[in-house]
Image 1: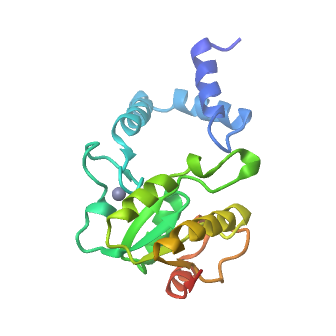
Image 2 (image 1 turned 120 degrees about the vertical axis):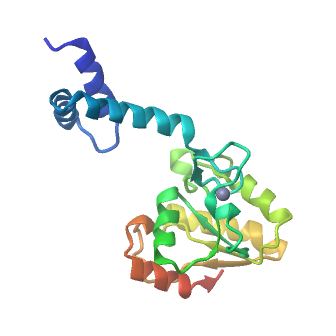
Length: 200
Ligand SMILES: [Zn+2]
């Protein structure tokens, strides 16, 4: 017989990725035992992230500016407009950024093609990519999707779309473990993969 409020909290924690029922319970008890300010700060951070963080309307990275303004990557005048690096997710973008090897722009697809899971081109930000490439001075698109089946399928699909427009399409060099995740590659490997990218 646990209080309903506690059950609701446990249920919410259990919905988070990688959190099972037991861990959810442990987290909920932790919240109860911790000073109330700590729980209020957690609640406030959750509300704030939902209300303030949005997707950039050009590259679909995260930012906390107005809906009309662009993110830091898009608005930074020192970055190279001729290069656009296409990634599956925000975590990949941040991993590449940490290497300091890339000073162009980004485009976040928010996923990869996966017919089995019902993810087609229309579920990704591919139409938006084509639109933004239309009147931008882009010369090269670096496809930095993950080196797994979905990532390779996405790279192939993008190549078929982009090459006919006359764009140079490149892929990160090997050295990244097949089936691996960009997000978890170490910085040196990622930097080498970016420097040694090959044409598709
Ligand atoms: Zn942006």
